[in-house]
Figure 1 (cartoon, rainbow, N blue to C red):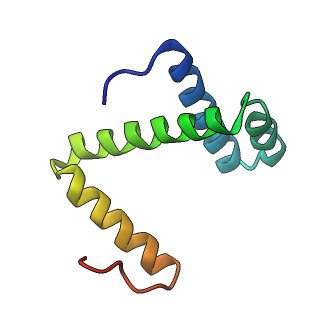
Figure 2 (figure 1 turned 90 degrees about the vertical axis):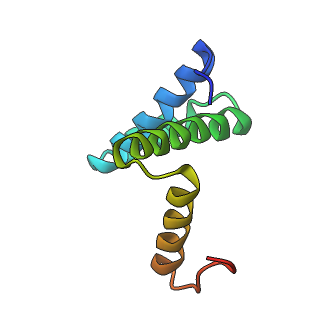
Length: 89
């Protein structure tokens, strides 16, 4: 992934703020940050950029390929949701 534009970086930081507020128990703050996104498309982009950055950090730290990380994440999500893993995994 290329570096986000300044506008993309702002959306990424806002998405990270939503996560941080939620984890410190500030649900009203998280809701306010979610409402501050200018559009649903901007919200989606912000969380996409945050996920891409987070997975890149884990990949760099673990040495795993992105495919392996995504496969592991998919299995974890399926297990957490009580669903069978996706076909081919």
